[in-house]
Image (cartoon, rainbow, N blue to C red; front, side, top):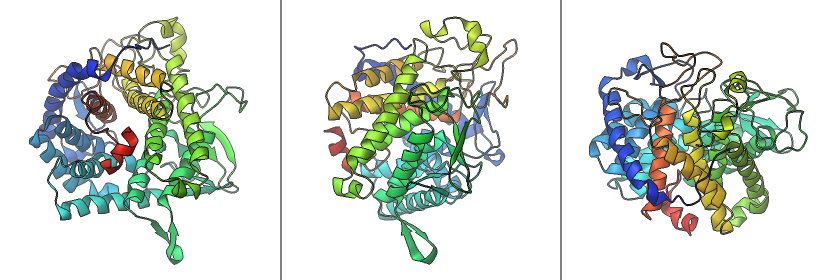
Length: 466
């Protein structure tokens, strides 16, 4: 169980965060100068150098988005140029990609961050540039919402690249594309000019994820433990019935893949922040604020509690809570995680994603009821503090990764295992590097009383932060 530092404040982490940005700049520069994009998007490192791994190109937005975050944090215009130029040159296919569930990863990290910076006055106002970003984000949200499976009871989901039967935990964060597109006034147009509300689909997908991907200890099956998640939910396409849990990247359908758990925690926390910008009359069309928030909060707090209880004391989880080698580690939850152990790898990227999610969840809950979010916010800060130091922060300029000890696909054996080791360790991934940067930027803004970082328009920041 995580040993939560109840006294830790965002301001206590500023020096470490500034140190992260110093190392981060050199990593981004190295990738920009040396990576060959004709091979595909960079995914993870092997012996410290970024390489690709064909599955889908879901990490490209994290590469260029990292440069944009670096500019946001430091004002280095070289980084802005890297992010803006590569967004223009490489990201258009992602806007209209009909075959994936990853729009929130790729397009919010690039076009979305650039539009946010313009909203904030961090880059010069330019009507044509603004409209370019807005058009990309409008299209991305509609394309993502079109990848849809309808279910009974007014539910449905954005289906994964596995096909219409498949709901992934990851996709909760692609709801960001629908949210921004909706905020920009866009709709999905279907046959006979039928308009589809992107907000309605966002809420439907989140409801479906909360019901079928998250467990609540309510007797769903023999392995129903509150807060546990499954990576994939499988549905019968003939009648819409739920058939079974499944896992693509975790150990089994009845254990918890910790990065999938992290996506759920962070995704629901962010969407709660977004819902707070909408008026009650709008939400009344889709069940009402009280009911929607109740479902979102139930999912976020259950998964947050599970993460805290089933993670080692320093906040870094092993890659799956049911991984078979964990039994050989003894009382591994009663001590800090060991990324160099002989039996099972840790996944620092799950920690980075969760840190941000818990900070956001705690902050949101505190705004509704002072003190109710303290446990989550402090757990998030505790996790982030661990990640900002060795052995997780990469300080070697010859290593292109920023956050060490990432795991991509353990069942498929895709992760590099160093010579003399028995499990993957010492490598990085684009999603891990991006999310440690995002968590660091959020926390430093909180420490310095700067605008609270959100994926959606900061024009609504005052309401969120009040």
